[in-house]
Length: 558
Image (cartoon, rainbow, N blue to C red; front, side, top):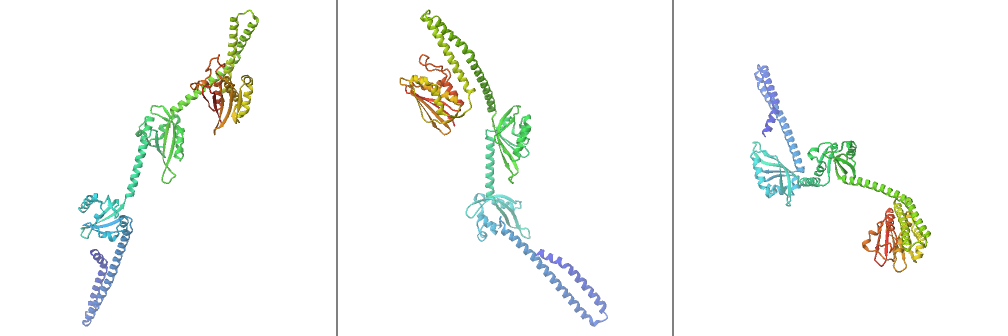
C-alpha cells in the first residue's frame, strides 16, 4: 500500500498546485473587488467554498481513476505470471520456512504425480530421497543464512516411488521488510538426459577402447585433412607418437613422391566418397615405407550432408606385396626355365637321336656282317648296345612329349570325350589285340579341352591299365559323372593294383615302381597325365587295392 500512496501523491501534485493558485487568485480578486461592499462578502465566501468543493471532487475522481488503472495493471501482471507458472513444463513449487508446500503448478503434477490438492497438504520432505535428506537440510540452512545458492543437482521421489534426477533453480521469498518467508524452486527432470549422457559416455569409452586396443592402424581426420585421432597400432606402424601428429595435415604420413596422389585420394573421402581396399603407402619415421590396404567411412554432420570426420583403417600388406613380387620373379624364372627345357628337348630330339640311330644301325650292321663269326658273348654285347640305343630314343621322345604339354598345347575348345577315347583306342589297337584287352565306357560328355592332349591322356591311362595286368585278360572301363562345376572321369582296370604309399610317387617323372625286366617303360606316362590335367585346371588321383585293380580319377572344370 505504501507504493500505492506514493503513486497517488505523485499523480495529485499538479492538481493541488493548480487548485491553490486558483483559490489564492479568487480570494485576492474578491477582496479587491468586493471590499467596498460589505454586504456581498458572504456571497464571495460561499462562492469560494463551492469552488473548493468542486476542485476537491475533481481531484478525487482523477485519483480514483488512476488507482483503478494501477490495480488493473497489477492484476494483469499477476494473471500473466500465474499463467506462465501454471503452464510451465518445469515443476514450480513454493514452500514456507517449515517446508510445507504452499504452491504447486501443473508441471509439478506431471513430474511427481501428486495433484495440487494432494501436494498443498504435504511437506517437501515427501519428495526427498532418503539418502539426500541431510543434503536438502544443509542446502536450506545455507540458503536461509544468506549464502547464495541458486542451482544444483539432486534427486526427487515421485508418487509411485520412482527416483528422478532433477536440476533445481531456487530463490528466497521475502516480505516488505525483507524477511525470508519461503523458498521458490524451479525443477527440471534430467533423468533421461543423464541416461542418454551415460550411454553416450559409455559409447565414447567403448570407441576409445576399440581404437586403442585394435591391432590394425586406425586414423581419423576432419574436413580440413587434419589428423584428429591416431591409435597405438598406427603409432607402432609409423614410429610416430599420437601427440606429434594430431592437428597436423595428413601429408606428413605419405612418402614425398606420393604426397600429391595420396592427397587426391584423401580429397575423395572429404567429398563423401569411401575407400574400399585402396592401396596407399605410409612413410615411417626412419624413412622406409609400408604398403597398406585402406577402408574408410565418412561421419556426416547433423544435416546428413556435410562430412564432419573420416575414419579409416588399414591392413599392412607389405610382406604380401613382397611375396607377390617374389612369386612373380619365381614364375618368370620358371617360365624361362620351361622355355629352356623346351629348347633342350627340341635339340635333344634332333641332335641326340641322330647319333643314337647311327649307333643302333651300325651295331645291327656289325652283327649281320660278322654273322657266324661272333661268339655268344659278342652277340649279347651287340644286343645290349642296340637295346640301349632304342631305350634312349624312347626316353628322349617321352621327355620331348612331356616338355611340350605346357608350352605347345592347343587352345581349350569344346571336345567330344567319346570321340577322343575312340582315337586313343585306335592308337593302341595293336597292343589291345595282342593282350586281348576289353575296353568299355559309359556315355561321355562334351568338355573344354585340348583334343590332342586329351587323346594322349586316355592313351597313357589305357596303356598303363593294359601293361600292369594280372593273370586275367585286361578289362578297362571309362566313365564320367557330373559334379556340378566339374566333370569327374574314372578309368577303372582289373590289374595288379598300386600300394597306397606310392600315391604321390607314381605321378613323378622317371619314377618307376617295377624293374625293366618286370615291366617296360620310362616312368614318364603318368607324369605327362598329371601335367595335362593341371594345364586343364583339374586334378588327378587314384584309388587302388593291390591285386584287385586300380581306378584313376581326374577332373575337368566346366
